[in-house]
Image (cartoon, rainbow, N blue to C red; front, side, top):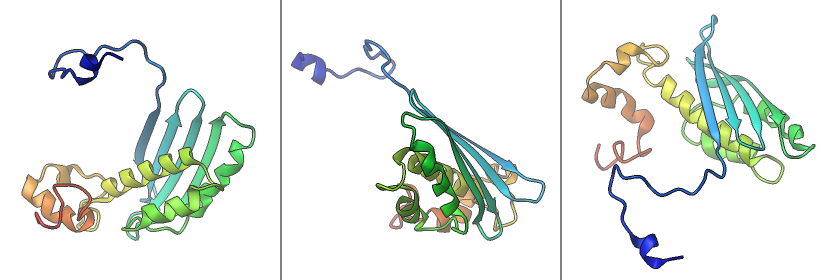
Length: 173
């Protein structure tokens, strides 16, 4: 490959020269409030080889997963759907610090599926975002919370998001 092409800087707004799209993976997650007050998340992972669905219900007051189910609607190997049952291992887990490590142990590894693990982690991260402000009486993904000024939103969410990104880095707080 031409060294000058590798090192050339492409200014913002200019098109990056692309030969062709070789693949694409989409992860989509929708959050719903159920009639019983629980949070339901419907998640899908779609790529040329997979269509994996994940359905999780969370009791917002305790942040506990009360239902979890997955389905491998499209998969590259006949045995892939056998891993779908792993989703049930999420039942009883709480959306709190350390859950990602537990998910890696329960869903990932040689007895699990890297794709179901990826989908589960993304779904749990989105669930945590949806639950911010719930304990303060704002409800699920509340508009009232979202229209607060930045300082108020920060103060409410900082205990949950401590050290999760630059903004919530402990030394800045």
